[in-house]
Amino acid sequence: MHHGPSLPSVLKSKPATHDTTTTHDQLMAGLARVTSPQETPIYICAFQDCNRLFPSRDRVMLHRKRDHNSEEDRDIITWNE
Image 1: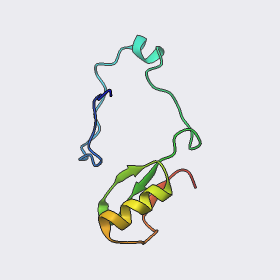
Image 2 (image 1 turned 90 degrees about the vertical axis):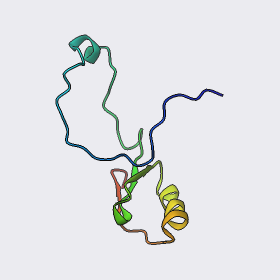
Image 3 (image 1 turned 45 degrees about the vertical axis):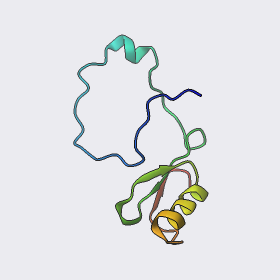
Image 4 (image 1 turned 180 degrees about the horizontal axis):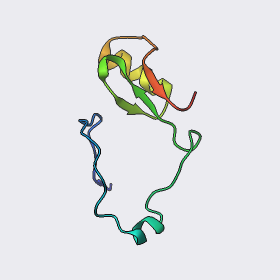
């Protein structure tokens, strides 16, 4: 099984800064691209400033019940609905 780099579920915020290392050629090579809600569903648990990301509303709700002991379905940030 391949174990690549991983990130924690919750990232600490910090001020945005200018990218001073990416070259024009790297940008043109397509390291990033525009996506859509259909291609990349994102649901964020904003309950008590949790800010964990999930691929579906169902997964957020499972997380809420397990980690927050709540079935509250508000405070979910998404671009899919």
